Length: 101
Image (spheres, rainbow, N blue to C red):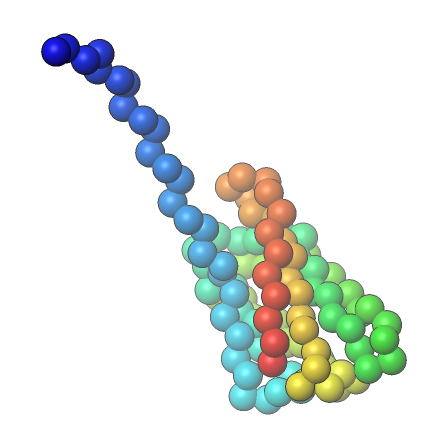
């Protein structure tokens, strides 16, 4: 029996790897590096400090291999959860990633 030939399905997009690498040598001042191959735009970092207030750091554009230091002196490193949000130039979408120290 003959079957119609379906046009080839479009290839699925390759997964986007989170570009961030964290160096935790100093727990109160972790270093965040953009280990990706492309710049990321409008980067914001959110965390809750010890006095239950939300702190937002606005980093703007972070280039590949660029590093930024977080100051968690007012936070308990065992309790703080850091959220990084950014936009990718390739698709204009917002991405969010969370990590603990």
